[in-house]
Image 1 (cartoon, one colour):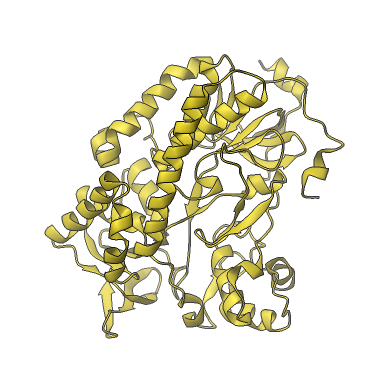
Image 2 (cartoon, rainbow, N blue to C red):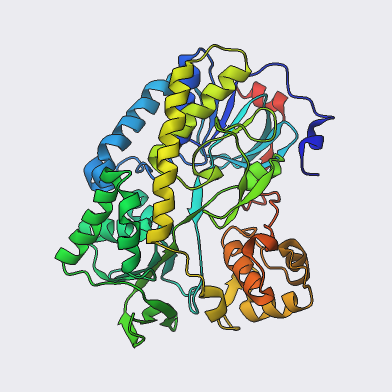
Length: 477
């Protein structure tokens, strides 16, 4: 059952610390704000160390400097890490902990290191679950050696290795250039950057992008650096397929003039920007609405980050992609709203300033959509044999034939009939592509297709995990 009625028989606990899910930029600033006002939050972190994906920290023993890891953002990353390290003794910090389900006012947790599971009741909850890659597959994308851009970046930051010794980066969006730059800067061999957005889009977006000149300048720098170091950058391309036998050996693509090209490589980083990670908000019963800017459904929030469910606040990219700087702002804003709702005095002028900063970021975000447009023709070009859902091996042709018998076009109905999005990833990887193909097949707007409803477990669970009761947990200290 979804919606606020879900909570009528499950009233919020009368007391208890605030709970924050996620320890990226949004979660850390939220925790800092709550501590500054006298509350000691529980911070649940799926990673072993706080920082999130953008400021992911290396394992113990790795020695790359912050400058090597984060580039221009080294100062910001170090400040955030040092802030969290300073706050940590005052927090109830729970790393290596996955929230895999939400029922009423209880979260189901998996402690990945011990492979144990238990539950946590909450009175107030800040959801800062971030974003994940927006994937539009090409034939051959399931070959070993093909990664998402986010996956390629994690390999470099967290594991200190490249996804291959000769890499092609393809897709579109700011992350495409950032990851290509980071690989080349770290000594990796980047064979080409293949951007599906035409170069003219940058010029169209330039005036609006000057709303944040520093951020825009960084993008110009990445592109200039790549070109100065003889990394070929191609705009307005069409990605045709990844080729290989046991693993990827080449990317085949059309250039802006329509000529077919082939770039031999040992790995491909593929991605079309990011999408919000919304499954937990869905299980919590938050209301969603279609956001044309993000081309997907996102949880509804007010200006201070309150969701439609009392006591649930959404911070960071999970309610719409805004970037790391905006995530910090939204984390503080969500925490201030929580404090207000608890009757704790907050600084109204500070809240107003934070709202203004987010509004300014929103303008820049719209400019990015102009500079790196979603490839509207992707679904029409996807061949029938293209595997869209790799968990269940569902092809574009199967989606089209199923859609033809279901003209109402709801994706959850299509899921029930052909199993798309019913595997391990629960639609997190294939949901965007499946929705686009259904909309194209039925010739309706993407908004009309709906969204795959979140289901537990959000992510795969080990079969041998042990459920720990509250009494057992207490006896173990």
